[in-house]
Length: 296
Image 1 (tube, rainbow, N blue to C red):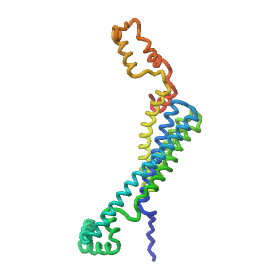
Image 2 (tube, rainbow, N blue to C red):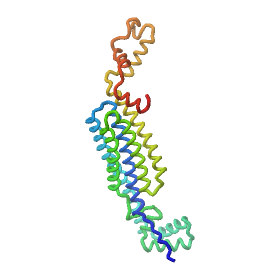
Image 3 (cartoon, helix red, strand yellow):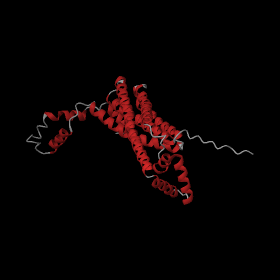
Image 4 (cartoon, rainbow, N blue to C red):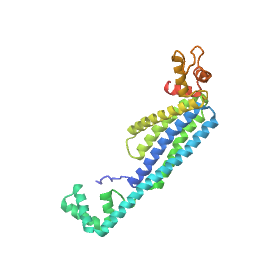
């Protein structure tokens, strides 16, 4: 009776796969959340499809290039550090081979091998490829599979672009009355899909990863859309007076003889007209966005 074959597909080096997978997940999540917050904020100031499309495309291009450049710089720094560590190890092997052999033996003993087996294994590994043995055991680096900054940059760029397109299309294509609910649903669905995809590619359990991605993305999206909606409200209400004017007007109404000698019977001066007009005028379109999102 033949034994079943043990087939395990590693799909290449784990470090290389995790490098671009990490960059892709980060880029996709940031593209979904940041673009959704941007277009919802712009929708609070204007309902023009051209303005929404322009703002969304600008955010998409700027974000994707920024993410790609950031990943390239950060992974390049990691690669330079790995190359520097390998250069130091190569020099030590050339100048102090006996000390490096003892060091490798001690590290193998620390991993559970007996002294005799560790010494024999260290000698065999050193004879075969001393640099690879020390890089793997001591540094945790595979000299043939160093991190690639271009892989991380392209993965982040493409993932951000795809993630940003979903909320952009969700707020541009539907009618005005359906833009907000369609955008909310598309963002939540995109976050769940990103979590499921990353879990499958990383050979992890999809359920917990999807929930974690959804919760983290929802919290980030809520904070960004709240700030964007507040920005949109202030941008579309030019008659709104400053905080100092409103505080001064409140002080004038509370003092018996006014502020600075103004009589209360005469009422506040003309500079406070804008404040009263702001409180009496109807809110702009962003107020409905804020109320629909947060009930405020």
